[in-house]
Image (cartoon, rainbow, N blue to C red):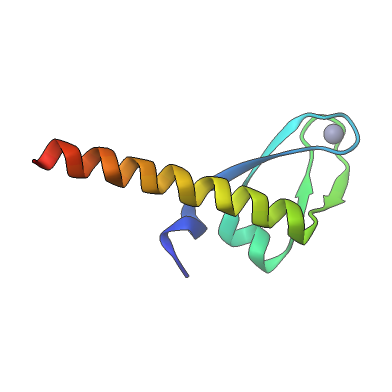
Length: 72
Ligand SMILES: [Zn+2]
């Protein structure tokens, strides 16, 4: 478990392109999203999950850098 597991990511529904929010920790356990718009369940590919994780890691790094600058 990492701090990222608690973060939510948005993935586009492959059926209607609606952005679906899901927690990263939950997606690691069961990589599928249920779209609130068309109510269909879709598999999340490992690639999509990895891309989203990478984006999130960068966002966290940016926040930490900003905080470090404030502390100085
Ligand atoms: Zn959908």
